[in-house]
Image: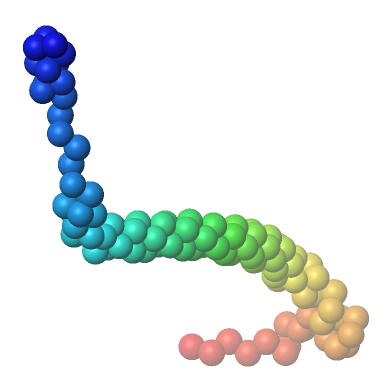
Length: 111
């Protein structure tokens, strides 16, 4: 019997539930703060990812517009070069405006 008493005395005594609940009550405000912080960090993370996606879409749109503008610029540069050719200008002057090259008597040299 003494042996059984010794074995029983080595078993831990049950904790009082009131003390355990008091410790949990002390941790509750900290848990609330941690949960709020985690929620805020999660919301910020999702917001930042949405912003990154939105900015990537805007960048792609601007790149597309830039490419279109460069093509338009190249087309207009080529058109301007073709409109400036001396043969075209001479043909327009003779045909539509009725102009002709001046005669030697019509040329006045200014010194």
